[in-house]
Image (cartoon, rainbow, N blue to C red; front, side, top):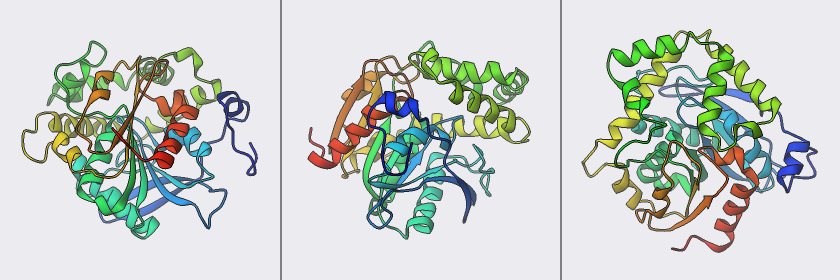
Length: 313
C-alpha cells in the first residue's frame, strides 16, 4: 500500500495488509498511555480521531480501519490503561469513567482540545459513551462497534465473564487461564470475536500470538483484565442518572452504531436502541464482535456516509 493510494475494497486491503502503526508514549495525569498514529495523507487538513479498543484488546485492533481513513483523519489509537503497551493507571482505578477522563486528557494533550471523531469497540465503546457524554466539547462524531452497553441477561458465549469478575474466584481463574499456551489463548479470542475465524489473515494471527507472549512477561496482565471487567459490569448494575443509557441520551453529536449479526458477545438486538438522539445503525450480516477488523471497508464507508448525510433516525 502506497501513501498516494488508499485501498478501496477488502481485496485491496488484504493484498497490501498494513503493518501496525508506529507507537509512542504520552504522559497524562493518571499515568502513561501508549498510542499508535496512522500518518494522514494530508496533514494540513486531516481531522483528529481517537480509536478505543475493547476488553483484552489493544490499539492494533484498529490498524486496517485507520489505514482506510487516512485521507480524512489524523487517527490515533490508544492502548487503554493496563492493556497493550500502556502500564496500569497511576491511581489503580479501572472504572469506565476514570478511563474516559484519561482519554479526555489525551485528546487535550495530543489535539489541543480540538473535537475528535471518536471510535470505540466493545468495552471501548462503553468508555466512548462516557467520554462523549461527560466531555461533549471533545467529540465531533461517535462511532460505536458492538458497544458493551447494559442489557438484560447473558448469552451462552459470554456467561463466563461475570464469573471472572467475582472477587477471589475470578483472580484464580484468570491465573489458570494465563498458564495456557499463547497460541491457544489467541485462537480462543479470535474464535469468540470473529464470525468466521478462518478468515483471519496469517499475518494478523501471528501478530495476536506475539502480543499474547509479550503480555505474558508483564506482572499486571491478569489484574488489569479482571479490574477492567469489574468496572464494565458495574455500569450494568448502575440505576442512577449516570447509568450508560442516561448518558447516551445526553450525546447530541452524530452517532453511528455498528453491530455484527453473528456477534457472540453483544446481542445485535441493541441495534434498535433509541437512546442516542442523533443516530444511524448498521447491522452487518457476516460480522461478529469486531466489525472494524472483519469488515473495515464497510465500516469506513458507513462512517463517510455519516459525515455526508448527517445522522437521522
